[in-house]
Amino acid sequence: MQPHDKAKFGRSDFDVTKLSYGTAPIGNLFREIADETADSMIQTAWDAGIRLFDSSPMYGHGLAELRTGSSLRWKRRDDFVLASKVGRRLVPSKREEIDFAPWNNAAAFRTEFDYSYDGAMRSFEDSLQRMALERMDICFIHDVDRFTHGDGQPEVFAQAMDGCWRALEKLRDEGAVKAIGLGVNEWEVCQAALERHDFDCFLLAGRYTLYEQESLDSFLPLCEQRNAAVIVGGGFNSGILATGAIEGAKYNYSPAPAHVLDKVAKIERVCDIHGVPLPAAAMQFVVAHPAIPSFVAGTRTVEQLEKNLKWFSHPIPGDFWAELKAEGLLREDAPTP
Image (cartoon, rainbow, N blue to C red):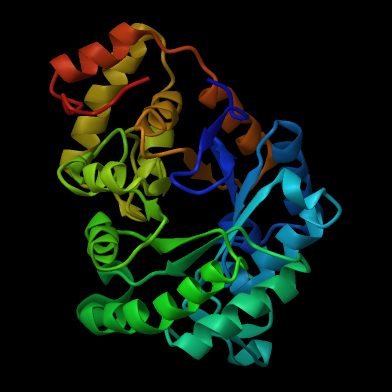
């Protein structure tokens, strides 16, 4: 498998590369990245054949979209697939009045949730202006999950399934965007949305990884039935499937609890027996599912990106997957490469 290999994007009329580039880190997530470094990563991804780029107004309060557009602006537009999101509006503000966390020295906008029809339309147009590109191909409704909104999630979800949905459906009907969906942290929210409306796709952060596969119970089968595409972000479970079960390893953006460390350590032992890097197994496992055409990953350095490219194409023997299942470390019904 190669990063530039392509797969059909569900029922939509375009293909995407199996590996895609996520632009959250170039929004200065956790630490500042120079413009030149951000551009170098996108150009390195391009040179490796990656042709799907995912951004959001949230990432760096607009900075990631600005940098993404700058790096892609002079590429032939039909040669790549571009995704962004609605659900937040950016409001120009004084830097000293903005809470940038977890972004570092981001763009001079504060973010406000807005899942209304007008808010989604405004957000969509603003994203195109920031990127200075004539279209985006995929548009997700962003963060209508419990991870983001807690007990207020049902109300937010209802707002988005009315306002944002009507806006994106209209944009899709008019040909302004090719595919619409949700970008969230919980598969249950994706399933609820797909049961309610005619969505084309989802960006699921984690929740289908080498460590956890509960979304095989009902969500991924429903996607197969409806021919809805799922891009998986957070496929390293926010860190531990890249670093391994080391002290301080992150799971869901927090230090991994003991039971997670224990299971990942067992997976690592099988990796060692077969000479398979843990991150390679994590990446290649995800895109073996027929509903998942692409694994999206962001990087902070060119070196990290180059590692991802190597892991994605690292040969993995079939016996490795069989042993994971035999040891009860991987679900029997999970598709494997």
